Length: 116
Image 1 (tube, rainbow, N blue to C red):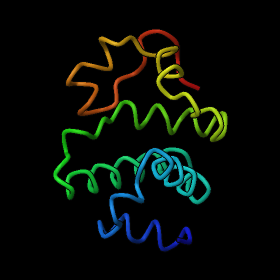
Image 2: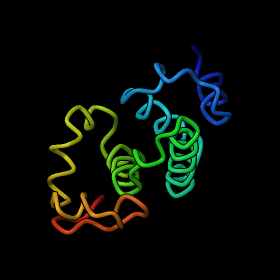
Image 3: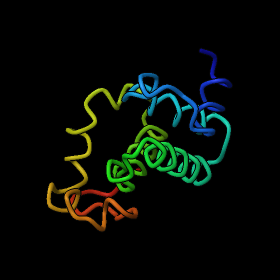
Image 4: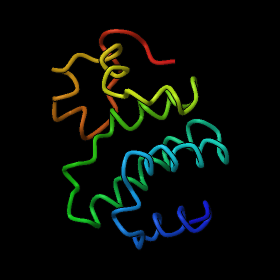
């Protein structure tokens, strides 16, 4: 599926769930980063993923802090940096902070090392 169709279907919540795995999240963020300034790319990525998760009945699966952090890391280092996203996040965030409901609902700055 081409990029325009992918984004359009995702934004309209008509994309089949099997097309939106981890690679789909990275693809979306990369496409937004290519089209928009960082802050807008982050906002669009968060809004699109959150809306899609809610549409699929998984609103509780969306994690704002992880989404923002990974988009920032992706912007700074490129997509290969996300090969081991959990280990990369662990450099910046303690498990307790990422497990907190506040960090799921809204972006929380890292407690271990600043994001780029």
